[in-house]
Amino acid sequence: MSDNTGEMPEKGEPVSEVTLEPDLMKLFDEMTFREKWRKVFAGLKAPKDSGDYKFAKFQLMRLSAPIAAVLVPIIAIMIMAVMSAMAPEPVTQMEVTVIEPEKMEEKLEEIKEIIEEPLEPPPPEEMVMTDDPTRPAGPPSETALAPSPDTDFSPQPADFDSVAIVKSPVIMKGIYGSRTPGTRGSALAKYGGGGGGGGGTEGAVLRALRWLKREQKPDGSWDQPPVAMTGWALLCYLAHGETPASEEFGLTVEKAIKYLAEHQSSWPVRYEWAIATYAMSEAYGMTKIPMLKDVAAKGLERIIKGQNPGGGWDYGLNNTDRNDTSVMGWCAQALKAGKLAGIEVDGLENAIREAIKGFKGNAAPTGGFGYTGPGSGGLTAAGVLCMQLLGAAKDPACRQGLAVMDPWVFKYNAAGGPGADLYYWYYATQAKFHAGGEIWNNWNKMFSIELVNSQIILKGAGVDGKDIGYWECPKGADGKEVKGHSTGLVYNTCLNCLQLEVYYRYLPTYKEQEVIDLAQDTGTSDEISIEVRE
Image (cartoon, rainbow, N blue to C red):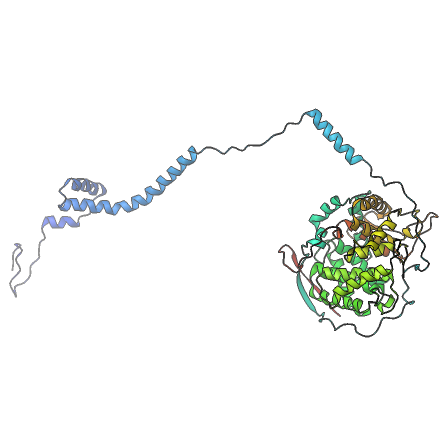
C-alpha cells in the first residue's frame, strides 16, 4: 500500500484512497458574487503572468457582452431624446389678408347683384322663312313606306349568347370629354348653361331622364315607334355620360341597349335604322362592349350600302336619285358617331366625303338647304349641322346656311311657322352651338330659358320620389299645338333633352377635336357585364 506522498503503488499492491491537496479542492468551491468581484479586483493588481490576473481578465470578458447589450440601447435612446429636445420647433407661417368691414359689405353687395340679375332673352324677332312645298308634314307612318328588305346586308355578327366583361364608364377625352361628371359643370359654365328656373338646364335634364326612366317599357323600349324612340332616349342618357355602370340610370341604359341589339333584325330601314345605328355607335364608343361593335358595324354597313350616287339617302336607304335632307341628317350623324367610336367599316371615310356632296347638292345658291333640292326651309339647320359634323364647317354652303338661320327666334309657345317644330330646333341649337361666338350666345339666351321654363314638372312622381319632367308640343299664336314631326311626349322630351345637353355632349366643331383610343384601361371604373341574346 502506498502512502499519501503521491507515489504510485507497486504492481499487485491494493490501491488505497487518494487524498487531494486542499489548494486543489478550492478550485471546485462556488464563490459568492461578492467574493468573485473581490477576486477580480485583486487579480487586476496581480502580475500579468499570474493565474489571478488571467482569472480577472477572463471574468471581465465574459461579463462585458450582456452589459453592453443593455447599456448601448439605453445610451442611444438618451442621445435621441436629448437631440429631440434641443431641435427647434417648426414654425408655420400663414399669410393673412385683413379686409375692412366696409369693403367686405361692398363685395357682398356686388355678388348679390350678380346673382339676382335676371337673365332676359333679347327682344323677339319675327322669323321669315321660305316655304318649301316639298317639305313633309312629319315622319312617314309605319304603313306608308316600303317594307324593309329581307336580305342580309352584312355577315351575321358574333353570337350574342355571351357575357362581355368591360370597364365602364370609360374616361374619355376629345369628343366625349365633357360628358363625365367632373367636366359637365365646367362645360356648362364655359358655354353658358344653367339658364331658366327649377335648377337651370341641368335640373331640367335630370327631370327629363327620370321621366324617361319611368316611361320605359319592361322590354327596354319606349313608344312610339319603339326603335326610333328607344334610340333617341338612349342618346339622351349617353349624352349625360350615363352607362350600364351608372348608379341611378344604369339599368335603364342597359335595358335600352339590349332592346336595340336584340331587335336589330326588325329595325325598319328608314329613319329608325339610322337613329338606332347612331345610338349603338355611341353606346359602343362609351362602353367598348364588343358585341355592340358588331351591331353598330352592321348598321353602318347598311347605311353605306344605301347611299345614293349623289351622296345622299332616300327613304328605305335604297339607291335612288332622291336625296332627302331629313333622312340624310340621321345617316350623317350615325356615320360620324361610328367614326368617333373607332368602328372600322369598309367605305366609311368615303361615305362621309360623299355625304358632304349630297348636302351641298340640296343647298340654295343664296343660302339654306331644302328638303330634296335647293331651298331655305327649316331643314337648313339639319344641313348646317351635318356639314359641321362631317368636317365642312368652313364651306360657303354651311356659312350661308348659318346666315339664313340668323333671324330665327326661339319661342316655345306662340311661335308659329316652321321654326316652332322641335325637329328643326333640335338641329338649330346644335348648329349654332358649333358655330360659337355671338351666334351661339344670342341663341343660348333664348332657347335655354324657353325650354327650362316650358317643361311640365311632376313633383315627387319619379320611381324614387324625385321630381320628373316632360314637354308637350309647342303652341302657335292661335294656342294650337304645333306638332310637326312629333309622335308624342317621348319624342318631345328626347329632342328637348338633347338640346339642353348640347353644352357638354360634343366639343364645338370650331375647336380642335382629339379622338383617342377609347379602349385603353383607365383603372378608375367598375367592372360590369351585359348579356345580350338574339
